Image (tube, rainbow, N blue to C red; front, side, top):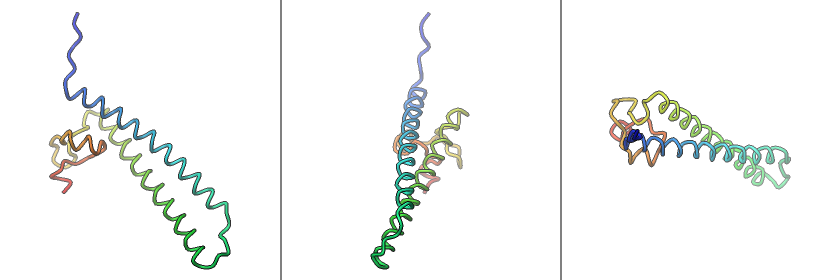
Length: 119
């Protein structure tokens, strides 16, 4: 008995799923690294190098927190994309329900809107 032929879309979805899972792992590693860096910064008392030095240290901490928030947002978007795959709605615009171009999904695998609706 011959194997059923997989559609081009199913092959694309499989590749996208692998890409999303890979990005998810990357985000997990990045998040852990940033948390270690932030804890390290928090463990060190602010140096008495004057207001400029302390301001620079606080700015570095704030930047680290922003990066953690960005990674967290990306992880949530990836989880939502994986859930849409499971539900069979991945690749369809949440606004107009048209199919999102494969080129866009390759560039941004967790895209929720087609180009027209994202504009």
